[in-house]
Image (cartoon, rainbow over all chains, first blue to last red; front, side, top):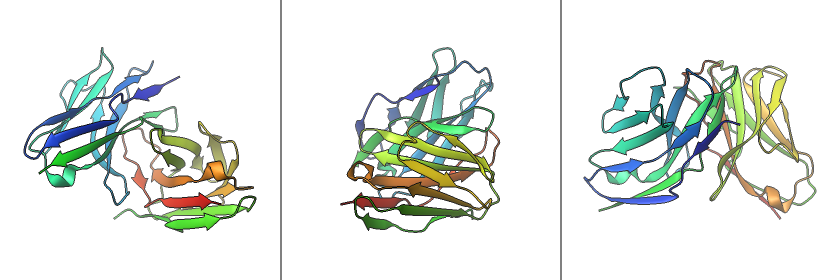
Length: 114
Length: 113
């Protein structure tokens, strides 16, 4: 079975500092995509960043970047210059199967200290 | 902007009632999903539909059914609501391609009393 594991339920970071959220996954596929989603307290989930497995280069979106280690099946999200608005739950996700069914990890609650 | 709209933000139902949760998307997406979100358990997939009238069970389908008669609408049905179905329900839609993001509704907080 394909799974996504987020082992840290909560993390905290000081405003303006950098934090890394961990995710590991298990798959037998050779090409796939990985996603990080953010769910702010208002609840609507939004996409933060995506990574294609066959690309060597780690994805970057402004202050958000990925550390993708394909051999280790690790997909970490790094948030630089943390802001109060980054406080949210973050989910790692992985689409599986011919119809791209999305599987999520359990999520990490990130708090940002002013 | 893509919109995924869930019919209710908050819902209170009695044990044994039949409950319908409705979800509509406006971007002609093939895929639609119903997830349940509980503290410490993350998002768990209840049902998934990849086309009109096509559905696939997710990880926790027991006690639920779904209906997709039109491409834009995906309904989750609790045939006989029970207290252990009290939860946050999230609907999402996406294109069938693996590289595309899923768009989510605001969620429905269902309480069964």
